[in-house]
Amino acid sequence: MFYPETIQFLYDLRLFGAKFGLENTLQLAALAGNPQEQLRFIHVAGTNGKGSTCAMLESIYRAAGLRVALFTSPHLVSFRERIQVNRQLIGEAEVVRLVGELRPLFAHFPDGHHPTFFEAVTVMALKFFAEQRCDLVIWETGLGGRLDATNIVTPLASVITNIQFDHQQWLGDTLGKIAFEKAGIIKPGIPVVTATDEPEALAVIEKTAQEKRAPLARVRNSDFGVRNSELRLLGGHQQLNAALALATVEILQKQIPVADIAIHAGLANVNWPGRLQLVSHPSGRKILLDGAHNPAGAKTLSETLQKNFPTERLTLILGVLEDKDWRHICETLAPRAARIFTVPVASERSANSTELAAACRRFNISTEVSVCRSLDDALNQSADDRFVIITGSLYLVGEALELLGLSTAGADERGLNEWTAGLSIPLAR
Image 1 (tube, rainbow, N blue to C red):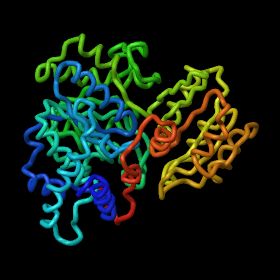
Image 2 (cartoon, rainbow, N blue to C red; image 1 turned 135 degrees about the horizontal axis):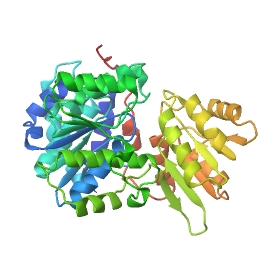
Image 3 (cartoon, rainbow, N blue to C red; image 1 turned 135 degrees about the vertical axis):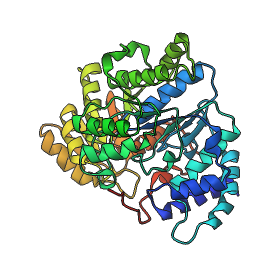
Image 4 (cartoon, rainbow, N blue to C red; image 1 turned 90 degrees about the vertical axis):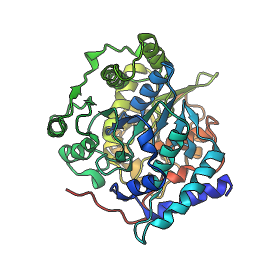
């Protein structure tokens, strides 16, 4: 196969949906030689901040001289973003080769138990990282934790960023139920670090850690005194993510020593696109890209706007997925905007732009709200506006990165983030 054919093959795997459980992944990994047994991991779960925390950990350990793998999802533009070594995206030829090597292994699975897209990609990443002789893998969960395909590894440390409402249809309708799924990454005797402060969620994490005799460390913003001036990433919430990363590094100092100079260099040079990413043009125009896709993310964005850009006249371009709590996102962000454009997300799950516009008008009766056919249309209509925010979905941010010429993919790969085509297995309770 060539790369476009390989991407099409991965597209076809989406037909098998998102199936929670570890059996398929364990079997596929075993058929591939159990590459996870050759690697060391830091496993990261949580509702928000997973990607930023992973990026900080990767940057710190790379600054310390390690060969560091990074596995994250979803991707913004290119599928290859999901699998990186020392922040270099996996090459197209490697994707073709790995898919070609895994494909014959699917014949070992009976009808109705075919590996899903995420299960296949998880094992593909493990195989690649083992071949690359990576010293450490920063390993982000896909969805949840307990039955997520990434949970076949035994890490050096488990990290749970926070617990908020998101993916309730999959993870449960209370913070306690969501925390139960996220806490599923906690392993017997393996230290766990969390910045969770919601009492209901924290109680579940504490109970799970106690049952598994896993040392638990709680992190607060003030624990390490990280200042925003020390971080490249915008937003006060990144101080807590940085504190979480630093606590993890500290806990693992005996296994992986890291000097202070590497820690400071790692934090100063961390890069994580699409999360409060500020793009400045020579004309003075600013575009802020942020993947806020749940109420907690929208609240963080709103607080950042208030703190960092209190006098700016803001234009909001908003697109959200239908299965997200878009009404609360509108309630949080609409009052901040002087002008609003609602757009569809390039997804089968996109919320209706007209309904988004109606919600925005309800929460900001004095502003101009327009419904646009596309993000490109909204960008054209707001071309003269000085400060534009594009938010509501990482899918939308990915599209914006392409339209703004900040990122390119060899094929249309953003659709690989879709996984609703097949019947999914509900989580056990």
